Length: 370
Image 1: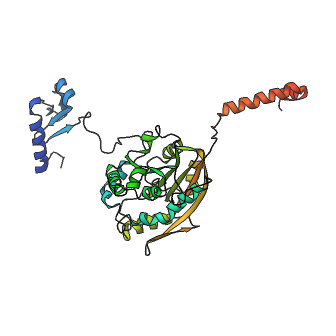
Image 2: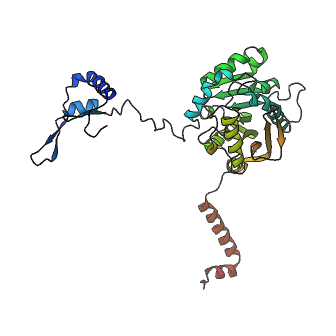
Image 3: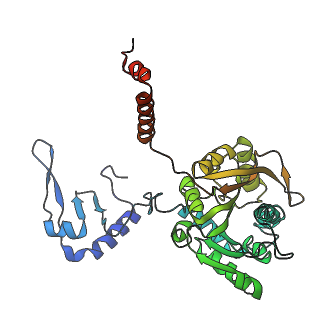
């Protein structure tokens, strides 16, 4: 207790260690003294050079001794973020979750079993929509000649089947251990080893070097983990070629998704490890479409996806209240928004031109309004 009583043994040991490390400072702090009128007064006796170097102040009384350590140049408060949303979309708390599960990516019966099964839907979804943009393709390698960026590739569960379809794939993930697992697994297939390149980085780190070079960007089960969705979509758009495709699979933000996606799947059935998802980060198809459209991406398809935990299989559905997939295409001639002042200026000039050709309009325009 701090009310003038004796410190606990743990506190005394802590202070003893702290004193032993700072014995060379010989800094004597402000002394608490009592006057004749029983009034408390403080007498600061700290050397300025000691305080500025070590940021230490000692407060002493007959029954209580404590130290306040505040070395701001070395320590950071645990609640202060080490990044800003303007610089990255990666959530460090999410990285810790996936880092602990990195060794289980290729266990088809483990925690990532639903993602293995999801390939039955998402791989044909990506393939079929990309084939609509080409006139001819090779049988067996329909995506040959296409460059695909797999964002948040994890252990490569989606990158490998896309590589087998002939695509040149770049898989990126901020978790270094995930990339190591993905690289090790693809090394067993010499063909995939040439077609797939993995990098341990965030999307923002490769935007400049890959700007408008990708035929497709895939963000499967990723957007519900990013910290800044709008910045993430902007980066995806910058990486795409004009006419390129963006594929997203994610979870809708509904009461049903909270009940089944978090309470049941994580806390009751254990289908997904606890703490994998945060309901506040889920995004509805309407909000996602609004963000896509504002970045020059035209939404082509939104389809619901349902997972059967008993059979372990996915199937398409018209219901998008849980999982859904979206396909959007980047505009080939993206129009940049014109500031309102230029719009009004253009309209004013147009009216002036009409007024010059029609004197009657000019008289009406100058007439005072009642």
